[in-house]
Every structure is written in structure tokens, then in C-alpha cells.
Length: 283
Image (tube, rainbow, N blue to C red):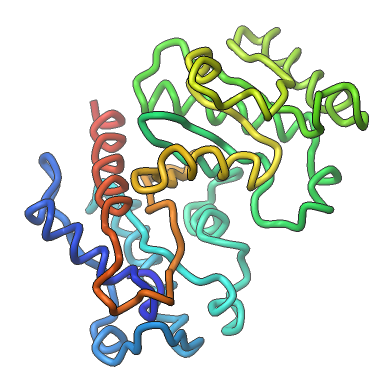
């Protein structure tokens, strides 16, 4: 369901309709609170609906954990509204990690043009350098590489790791002190990993041919390139979970909720990718 005052419910309904109620061999089921949806006021979020939003996520996760559903696709939530009601997580990814007892859930944004993983996600940019560790880079990289094999069918996945600073090695010491040792450890383990690489030359057409995913150091370093290249068909995939979870790569769009302007293409892409990953795991 997502945030009922946003575009989530309408793009979910539009996507289900566009797909004829199923994707591949999977029937589609909408999970939400009917009473909340009946009284929803588009564009006017209410913290009183937080329980219905999180409850829908919890129900979907339980269905997946029990083997009753193949995947969960979440519509956008508004974290600020949920936090007003006491929600204790920075976002969907962390909440899903809690619900599934996953030790390190990892956010990937994926399309047919680019896959990116931000090492740090929802935090002030000033806090990013302190949040980067060699161990976190290695762990996140290995989760990403495993997912590229298991979920995306890439037998020999290649990972590019971005530097934190402009011209890695010329400014600051994080690239040499934290990122380079992680790359060396991953290479020593037999992984096809390169870095730290300059982020400003990592995402053009030729550069993208040299890797299957890019591990970036912070939110916008990862999200700006994929939203530029694949705004309408980018998909948020949570790696490192025992279930399959995707979502559209956009927010609640309160300004257009209820106007009929919401575009369901990213939701349709998220549903299709969820089915593809579920089938890959089942196969």
C-alpha cells in the first residue's frame, strides 16, 4: 500500500491493471487497509495512518517468509510521517532487515542500464566519512556479488567501487586508508573488483561496460546517475534478505497524488523484477 496520501495506492492499482493481475506465473495481490484507503485524502499525510502502512509491510513479509508469496513489492512510504508516529527505522531497507532478521540488508538500485549500491544511505553527508569502514565495504561488496549471481544470473560478476573523494588519493585519506584495503581483500578472495575509482568518470556509456554493479560511498553518488539514466524504470532491490523485495525508485509525490498524473512505469518495472528474481531463486 505504501503511504496512503501519496501516489502508492494508485500506481499499485494501475500496475496491477496494466499487467492483467499477474506477472509470469505469479498472481498479484494488493495488501492494504481498506478503511484507511477509503478515507484517504491525497496529498495530506496523517501520522495516524502509520500503523496501517507498517502493518501492510509486516503482512507482506510474513507471507513471503511463510512461503505463501514469492516476493513483496512496496509502494513508497514517507519516513518523516512514520517517524512522527514513533517509527524507529531510517527507511524501508532497515525495517525489512529487522522483520527478516537479516544482519546487513543492502539497497541496490537497478535497471537495464545500471546497477548501483550505496554503502551509506540515509544520513547527513557530513557523517559519511565516519560511517565508512573497510569491513563494511567488504561485507556489502560480497552481498552484492552474491546477489548478482543468485538473483541476476551473472556467473562471473564484476564490481566497481567508487572512491569517496574527488580524484581518489589526491584529497583526503579515506580512499587509501579504507577503500583500497577493502578492494585488495576482495581481489585476494578471488572476486572481480576494481577501485577506488573516480565517481565522475564511472557512469558514462563506455565505463558501464566494464562492470555489472557499482558500489558507491553515499546516497547521491549512487542515486544521481541511475535516476538520470533510468528515472522511469529504475527499481529499488533489497539485497541480503531471505525474501525478495523490490519497490519503485521514487517517492510519495504528494503534489500529484489523486490528480491522475502519477506514472506507474517504475512500479510495473519493480513488479516484473521481483518476479524475475523470485523465479531465478526458485530455479
